[in-house]
Length: 317
Image (cartoon, rainbow, N blue to C red):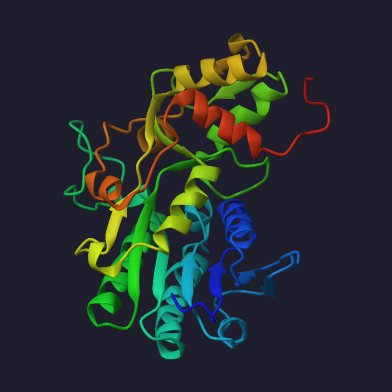
């Protein structure tokens, strides 16, 4: 990574983007942040606008590019509702951005935030590992798989030095309309911290792959410094995650917040259950070798997730 050129972060105003910005700025790095709206911070150049707009990308690249972390996306539920918008942002803008970054920098490190959605809904019951084929079911997962291929192709051609990281469920998002079908996981944290009743749309014995946003940001930052020779041949890997049952997650949040776990009742939605609560054992040898980490244990994940969740007015003391 060229020290004189900035790190460019797309989707910098989002949930993961904000956590990553904090980390990079704490490290004293120059950052160019792109999103539809951004609050300026010391050490950061904010470019507000649509990533699909060539003028926005041109402004972001005006000072060169030491590295790129590409987070911007139209997520799952929103992509299903408006697949044309999702294609324009998730695929076309990404394709153009990769070419433009390669044109202004000498094989820059590119870290692409992919997703476990690339594996689809019918994951093998025996488990997922580095050899599991991609079989996306949603537009979002298909778009992520396409950009993974672009990152690998451009790396093979020597245009960029890329790595796609398949992110698991990241918690805990602040209450908002995120467009993510998995947002109920973060809503569970918010409800129990406020000691409010919550109807969970997946079953108590459903299984999730989870990581806190703090750990996710650290993993994205770590990806900027991995030696090129250590990167996997396919230029993609699945990040480590804790595999947790929903019932265990409820108990851990309740213990951390003093809430009554009986506040949570279960009304499983078959589609959500199939897509987000049937995740088999996960083996991540490539990511482990590269130094990526999960939160360690369930109690640490809950502590980390609650620490970054904004306090709501009226939360229980």
